[in-house]
Length: 80
Image 1 (cartoon, rainbow, N blue to C red):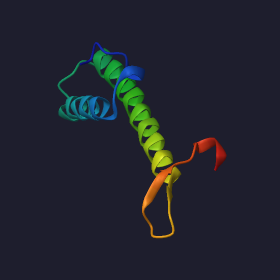
Image 2: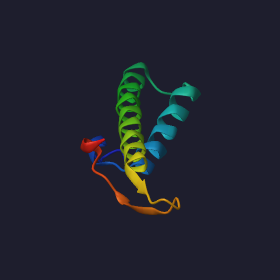
Image 3: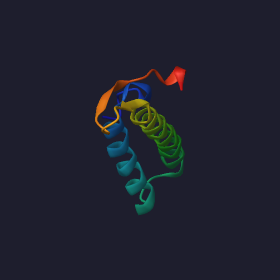
Image 4: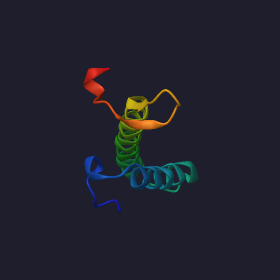
């Protein structure tokens, strides 16, 4: 999975790899240069997860409800 560019990852892919990176860094069995590379990858993965969560929150916020509280559609985020 580490070969896939971070911007192309789904939330789940990024989270899974981030957990692996954190695990490797916590074990401390990685050379310094590799640790720096892992840390940089982890920071990019964290950012990707945050972006995907924000997108999901915006989609949920855009769901419109009818008078009975039933979803009737979505409104574009830009119109909110």
